[in-house]
Image (cartoon, rainbow, N blue to C red; front, side, top):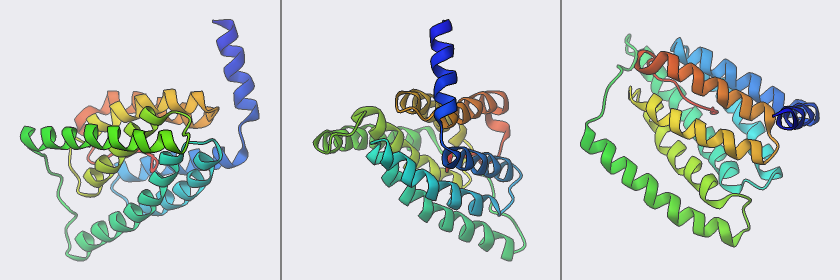
Length: 200
């Protein structure tokens, strides 16, 4: 146990200021999105831009490409929330049926298997885990922009898997951020309206 803690401490000391900046912006995003403040999407866009570089640098190519999607979703989320504000009411929180969730889960599994095969070709460092977190995050970020309540369940699973992925690649502050996110979501459960990840 002591060896694990010493290894984690050593890794934290080697973590870049750039990663720490991305983590702080991602935390800002979480705080703002829980309050349904539209500035959350700006924090998301900047954090995402930093992570695009960081993930590519450590060989997580699908996670890096995911950040491009997140940039687009930050713009989409801003537009959707702004549109609701211009109509004098915020976009309402909604739920999806079990049948719709079943279809979504099938899509995530299929996408994960296909993307993992492509990632093997480009020698990704963790093809299946990288593919799963990417495919599931794409769907779940859309759920956040649409204010689908159950997004917190998806993020709980995605963030838990991401912790393993980031620890393996030496992104210790990011792993810590995701650990905080998992614990936060577990406490809030479905009370929070539309919590997302880095984006988170």
